[in-house]
Image 1: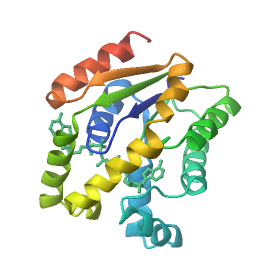
Image 2: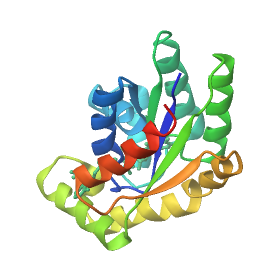
Image 3: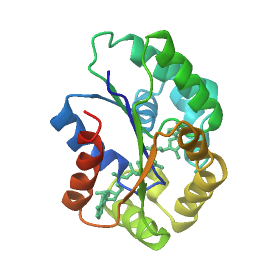
Image 4: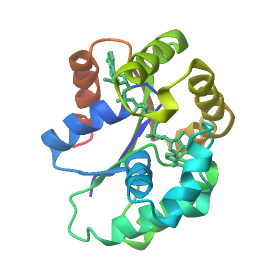
Length: 191
Ligand code: AP5
């Protein structure tokens, strides 16, 4: 199994690049943001609870997202591997993910972190907010709150994988195609 984490702040291109990576490498895409937005659109109790956090740019509680990821891993026993997009976002989530994969005799193969300057992150998210229905792209305050939450709670996850020798940074401020080629070079070096 090849299990990849696409890491980086809001707007760094994790979702955009995940789509291309699954097409090329046949991995299963697990995006906690997409899973949560589906729950919101279905107006489930989980979705209603999660929305309170997401609308403020805050992380949803660990136990909620860990349970969602655990069930999606269980639903795909024959997967060639997974690409985790937006998960793990806290150290507790990283430890839980290692444990979930170990139980399947798997592990994280590689963590690729997209590095994009903050003004470009804000530009991209506000641009999408002007043309899409994503509530959390609607204002600069909300976008900045998400970036703050990333620095506060998610950035420390990098150390967890760096200690395991699995963490690499990639320039994410080029074009979508340029970034994809950089990611493929790193992935191909391990396959
Ligand atoms: P989530 O959906 O994961 O959003 P995010 O990580 O905050 O940000 P994005 O998905 O917007 O950024 P991205 O890096 O995927 O970039 P994208 O490719 O979309 O999470 C939303 C919320 O859900 C969180 O705030 C939290 O509340 C909750 N949540 C999710 N996971 C959680 C977890 N594990 N724990 C707790 N809570 C969780 O690109 C962004 C824009 O930029 C697009 O318009 C795109 O077209 C454009 N773009 C991309 N690449 C380029 C490029 N190279 N050049 C120019 N534009 C580009």
